[in-house]
Length: 383
Image 1 (cartoon, rainbow, N blue to C red):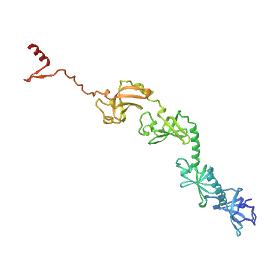
Image 2 (image 1 turned 30 degrees about the horizontal axis):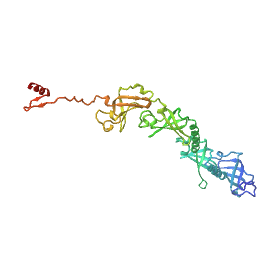
Image 3 (image 1 turned 180 degrees about the horizontal axis):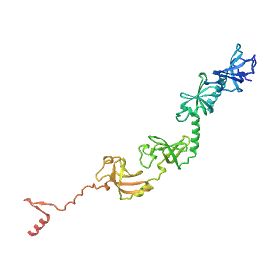
């Protein structure tokens, strides 16, 4: 037997001893124990639990064996005042400290819901803040009352009787394990169905098998996308191609555009060299402008093909978003190139210069104009 728990006799029982007794009686204010002593053992209701209770029957029943700590011996009333709460706390703090250091999880039963979280009795009062109940916001904490849940110790301070528990820590750990397993099962290059979870400035996060993968804004569609919300919204079901998986970082790169047919495979078939078509200027660069013929299908108007007049810079003539008519000069599907001309699609051609004449007028002294032919005729007459 340990120094704390000893065989109880009338002469050996002392305050501070931890003794075990059997419940013989329960009333509204106390529990009576037989601890093998001449005196009865009494546990006041306040010493039954680390939590506030309305009736002792919430904690124990007649016939239960209960471990308690001797608080005092009342010689006048012939009773020994005991505490189940303090006996449980001494052992609980030691066990909880070990769990905290090892990071292990364990089950608790939620006894009560209070402002800001849940309360449980683990030998001492344990508090689970609302922010640590789940991985997402929980609107109704009442649904957890009476439930058995797994938690981890995230803060422990026996001196101030403070114990903070977290269910979220357990769920996070389970999620990480699930993510690792899912990542290993995602074959790069495959096309899968996912659900759009949230949008950011740089793309959309899509759930594929319990893992959120990123579809960068450049991978949302074959055509240029300024804002993700122009293409998708949270809750949409989309097809995505898995581009890259990084299990260590827990990242998945996805593409919506590559899960769809390329416009260079299908859309380009409707165009032929020589066609004059309408397009929209999407990008302006130093050497020309890219014109979108249909979503995802762009051709280049070289700066030399913008106008019959000299153009120093494409931006001097064109602006993004402008609708223009262009003539298709050439199509190279294998290189994904289309050459276009603005000047060949318009009627705005410079006027033709007239051919110069090959004779000149010669003025005589009298101001009369004479041609070279006239002069030759005059010479023959004189001869």
